[in-house]
Length: 174
Image (cartoon, rainbow, N blue to C red; front, side):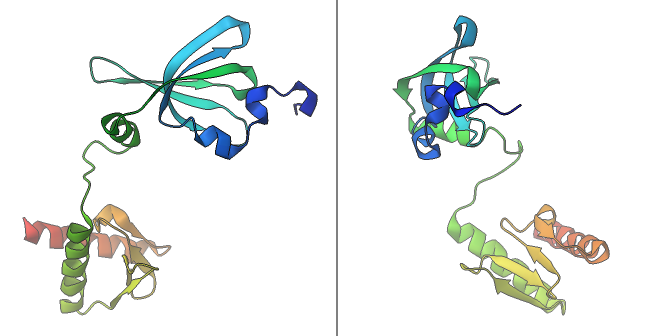
């Protein structure tokens, strides 16, 4: 069912750039039927105006809530986020073992893998605007941080073989 413009709330009438100003801010939300929500805005869907809120719990867990855009009556910013909170929110949906690497570390990993592949007679070149993607034989790409899970190819056989090679390479690095 489509909503007519006349039924849109003030929240829904905002532009995506206006919604962006709420991201990473702690807010109080008043929604339909006097429901109240408080939390950190992770994102606002640009089509539906739905808000994704995170509440950082004392035990280290996180509670995520979705508030439907058409139900939002008022949003009040309570506080700005600190760098620590921004970092925590940014890493909510990353795999547990994900690591962040400096540009130098990524460059070193890329060059080391590229040299190893070339030593094993596998054609590889650097691609992309910042030359961060490795392209193997024109049919497979390896993106940072250059692990087996960072390979992409429509050819399953090549994908599987190169992933195996990278696992061998990583085992040698240990």
